[in-house]
Figure 1: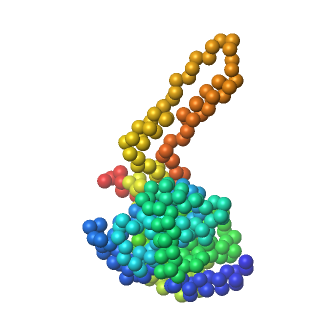
Figure 2: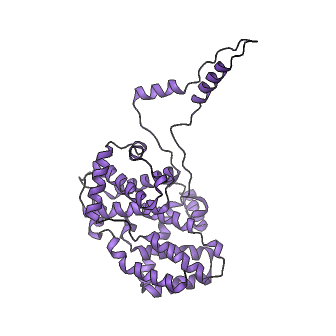
Length: 334
């Protein structure tokens, strides 16, 4: 797609983004709530979004799925007052709705598996009813304009105009940084176009590309984004990524999924996983059927652990090196 069509598409999305933003008044109510209230608190919401990140990584879903799920969740929470005990059902419904839009049908996780792996206490029917409620309240059909929409457009525009170190502007890195920001409810108040541009400028400044910095400035002028507003969110993004690069920060994408089971189930699992005593094979009397049975016993005792270690795109080169060093020095001096 040529530069003119990209800029036209950018303008269309910019004009429509307001229809897909959560209500700021609703988000402010969540931020002002405490965990003792009957309403969802910001801490509770952020923890649930981190769980969604872990689940999308576990199931191998794309970044689009996670970002759309968070968008649906925030818009619903900002509109409806729900009790904390219903948050798991709402969040998993949003994830399932997003996956059905962005993922290939063959990659979709069955609903019962989604509930089981998510360790939720509701049924497939409950999830289906909640999906209908969310879709009706949000008038959701098949799309939403999010910060990821603009991030992809900005990236394509930058690469179409620039000949300076194209390989340094990593879309995977930008997506990982966006996911880190979305784990904080405060970034849901930002316009998607401004949040994405703040991330882009942050990365361009890190790779020190004057050519791409001029392109980012051209995008800002094209969308008529005020300098003060962009500076405000750029500072918040920098602080968020600095905190996220800290060794103190627990990365949602680098957790082990933990299954909570009863004592009886734990005992059964322990006995199942114990290595069976193998019968002595008598000399000169080899029986192939016995050999196959013994092999199956050994194989069954060597299955993977119930805790699955998730790969991480939430650390290492995906976050600014100067921020990681700065934060690490602060951590050592405290």
